Length: 373
Ligand code: SF4
Image (cartoon, rainbow, N blue to C red; front, top):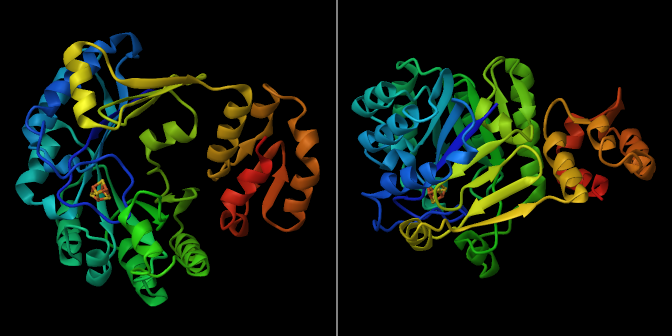
């Protein structure tokens, strides 16, 4: 399984909570695809056979003219190629969706859309400085449902100070019945260096409420059960058979390559690298023939800790034998805490696997921390 991630670092507005790499400036936007092509070509020793998944993320890839996205895809097709049944995802913001764009996206080969709905409350959307209103999302989804993409994902945020329990239930009522096949739902977090973080510190925005976030997550789990969806990763749920193949790569420690500023790559073994999170440095590196990135080799401990974090988030859980291959003493070392977690109904400990229970998923970060070395 080999996936290619393509980072498009341009946005209309700066969402208050965002800590991805993006700019609202226009510099390099028109030529950006040419730089991506040059980085892609410069890394041809990393190309696998034909790509099995492509993912345009950002930033806001739907801001770029479709012809530019198609130009890059054609370039990739003419190199190692793209598998016939590849999953090709485009992250799209609701305000960019119209029938013309939809046809263009389909024509260049996009077959999966990830729609940045985030909220159906206009008050919340404005508080988060999103560039769209709820009406844009409803309209966009109506158009997408009729367009027969292989799959549509909805990105949602829960647990914010502006989202009541009732409004979250209403949002999920819509999300599970609007025709989408996949939902990515994340609790709002206030990362340092975001405006949200500063606003909380200044008292302009209320503190995030852990209890509310836990309640919203529990409601999400109730909807998953009621609609018989798969909760296959802590923040990702889908109709059976619609797991995101590209993202599953990350959670399964499979190799992937990322191009564009801030994009991460992993060789599937121990080497990972990430590009500079700065458009000017990214572009000037390419122009000088010196790609700007940082690379590191994971130590045994770092690799085990990554396995614990990523696998525990998955429905299938952590296979202890994967850790044994690297450190045979881990289970003995951690057995007391594992048994305690099991007694508290936070995990299932069976058949060499540790699987979070529904209750355990509420405490997944703390559980991972306790199991790490
Ligand atoms: S649109 Fe997405 S990437 Fe851009 S600022 Fe908002 S959250 Fe960040």
